[in-house]
Image 1 (cartoon, one colour):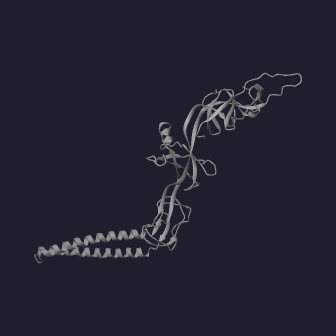
Image 2 (cartoon, helix red, strand yellow):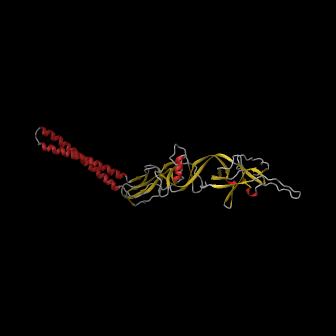
Image 3 (cartoon, one colour):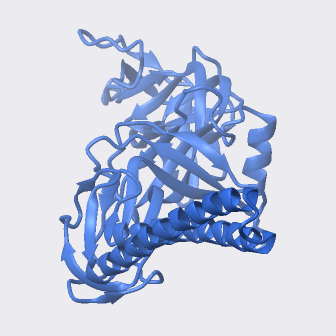
Length: 376
């Protein structure tokens, strides 16, 4: 769609009388194809360059340090949540867990002995065999043994977690990327081993101007997160094809970028089959407005000559804006007018023409042409 208006100069073809002489007969009128001006509601589209990205991108980082012993997934394929991706050498962490388990059992035994000491002291105190101080000491030892048991349990739980974290799994469903850590590599929590991206739905980000955002807010609100499930966005891929599924706006950024005067919009497109991938570029198209009752002519009715645009019509001058393969005429035409779409170069003002319907016209006949008529 053209971003600026195109001035269309209407070429008036007036009927002219045919002067015949005895010597030279008048040439037959040239045949031209005409299309009727149509009146309809026309959506006005705009396009922006967009970048595709995963709806969620999860960088896979290990939670423990160690050497990679195994890669358990195939790069570039779909993985499910909790699917195993890598195995880190678990032997050291298993030894730590076994040690923590043994310490817990030792402290549990010490707690049992402390409780027996307290029970015995209570009986001896009743018989006045031991001093009160010994009971107080054994009560303190019992509490200390109980605290040691709880500490050992926490240590064992942490050791089991660390041992489990040697199994590196995917936190989301998605496409797993190329591995950045190979078998034998030493990894740590700062190492990105690979990335898993959720691509169904897939996200596309594009920037619109502040003026376009304001017109949306005052008009059909197309740039706001979808109200309902009505998809408003089309995606034109790099090969020129239009992606078959339509998308919706899911995020409008909180601010306008003061450096560019644009605001970021994020849309979501269904991506069954995972055809679309993060990093692709495309053009996002949206209907920003609807021109009610617009007068429309075929685009091929407009003829360019030395930078000027002309159209053979039965009306005075008008202006136009390109929409798809048609032009909107803002003024100067009536719905019943006809415009020349074929044979314009053979026509001169005042020349008699033979008009036939064009395939561009909704009233065109496929069986017989219309009779000759004077052009205006």
